[in-house]
Length: 220
Figure 1 (cartoon, rainbow, N blue to C red):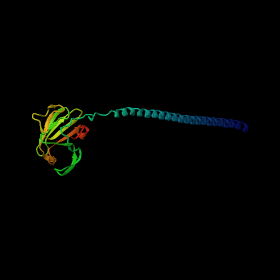
Figure 2 (cartoon, rainbow, N blue to C red):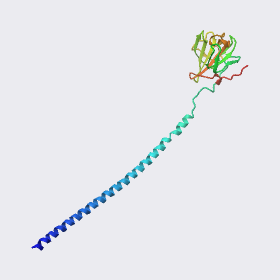
Figure 3 (spheres, one colour):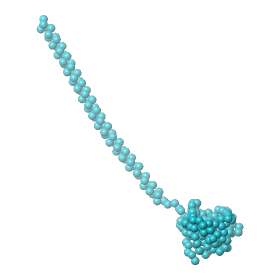
Figure 4 (cartoon, rainbow, N blue to C red):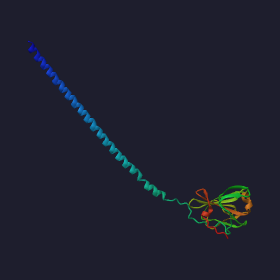
């Protein structure tokens, strides 16, 4: 009886070991599959990163291309009117004060003198230096006497101060280069000690500029 009972028991153990071995093989196969999957997946991610970097580099090159067009635009200079040459505003040229830092002996002050002073005699004719339109005629009997402002093309404006306006001249009148627009007035106002003279100023786009930029001054 004992031999018959032991044989079934041995068969059960053998079956158990076979099942256990099969389970171990399955687990090992799954582990190998997972490892391979992770390894291959990591390689795919690396390839994608390299591709993205290549595309970004191309974009950087594209961004630099428009700079060439900007350089060409910078070469285009605006018209400043500097090529314009004025007629002299007076016949006898005697420039006593130039554009720049200046000591006003009448006021005993230093400041930027934004024009040129041409010495003259009261009654000397004053001429329009360029074709234009009379913008204004303003009188200040205390400081500057009469000032005539004429607007020209290319953003240029000229002013003539310490003058007596020509008879009949009014704001809005069109004047031609060389027209008599005024005469030098008697010495007066804030530059009284400089004697009778024309104070002449030039503005480009409402900013004062040195009149010598546009005048060919040859003193007589």
